[in-house]
Image 1: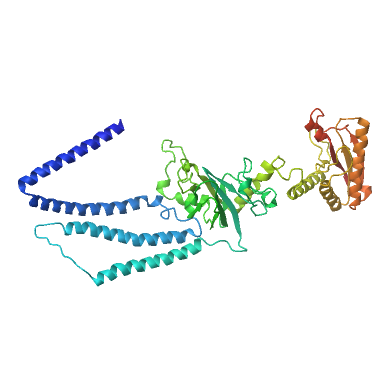
Image 2: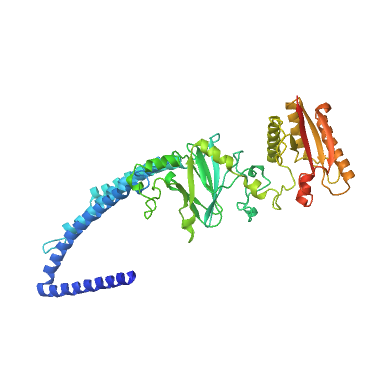
Length: 506
């Protein structure tokens, strides 16, 4: 119905214009064309002046009205170290182009009024004027030279890469239809290598899992950055042209398929600081949802955002990620919660080229876990544990393994046994009992013998590492002390184990 009314209104307007034209034509024939033309020229000249005043007034009033929503003005000053130089460049450019805009429109509409056709008007032809040629050639040349030099200085500042030794964070943003895939380095601070040929369903970035630098990289859902820290973003596109756009930080760089780009910037305002600045403006002290007066204010709901500034497809609008700028302490706490993509999604699967191998980061993790277990056991009160509560003084050696059916230690077992030897050296009064256990498969007597042999091997290994034999004892329990059910393979696997129990630390 609305469309029909609009269509009928437009049709009626056309009919009115045609009728006015016919009436004007008839009037001209009655009064004379020259007189009508002169009267029309006068009225159109006045209309031009009025339109000029309205146009320039509208530009000024609308710019003032919307200034607090525009980048670079009101509360939306740049939130990055380099942003002010870009804002300054845009302001200077706006000053010169604004002067030209105003003067040319004044001249355009003033001339339309001043030099309207009359009965006595006569055109004057200037063949050449050196002064005018110099003015309209020299002034634009000087202004353009200034703008170009200022632009180059800003470009060299904004596009400078990190220098060797710079304290910075390097992250990666991969664009695809229609999302951003973010990658951060783990504790090593280095992003691992990648190869597009390795991209698969469980390896969306094509990371090379033989590169140890990839083992701790993680893929967060939001972009978190610490305030005051230089950030270098690697920008990659997986399909079509995209654009990495952080408007509040004046960051904008194309993501080009096959051509990695980058941008370096330093955020200077946390999300909370920016919200506090918005709080001082009445435009942002209104409910975010106008239909719900109880909803939070606009300033409370503000978040920095990562967007795509290229029209990359019909769902281009959905390429929005929340960006959170926080203090270093908040950033460190957030980092501590992140899980390595390799360790959480790849490790141990068929696609893992390191399946069956013990990696360096696992050796380190196992060592930390073993030390923590021993420390907990040493502060144990000695009060018997309640039913169902684990005995802290009995610690399982999960990574001490034997060849199937025998008592020969696997090569990886040396790592955890070495960690145990370090602990025993750290606590010279510590005495332990090494125990071997099996599942209930096979002959009970044979299982007991095998478990005794395995516990003896562990004891002998520790003695070979310099630990006094008087501090060590070994016993084989066979299948007499199961840790889980023997009715499933998973349960039997848990029952096949080597443990040690802290006897005393005196």
